[in-house]
Length: 101
Image 1 (cartoon, one colour):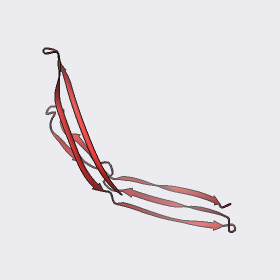
Image 2: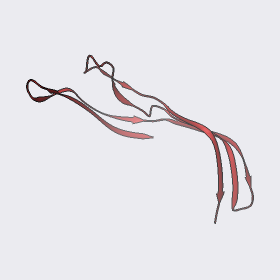
Image 3: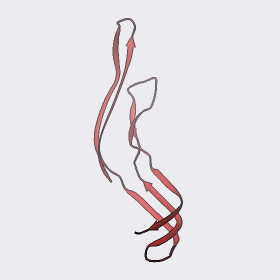
Image 4: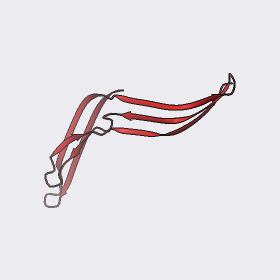
């Protein structure tokens, strides 16, 4: 998978003395990202005839680097941020029945 991303974060605070909103953080970032993925499954199936079949098995899918975002590291120093990314993985049992008509 491939994506073109644009991320923006803006944080303001109301200053009671001046009566204005003051900008604390104003961050904009644009980047391109290729997301590798991995999928594997194993199972058994039974084909009743040319039109119907049933399958059961176990499937695993991983999207690497999918949750990519800018994260603030500290609430005392508001302008300190870093990129953080995580892998998203799914796995589990599946049951599939199909009928062609």
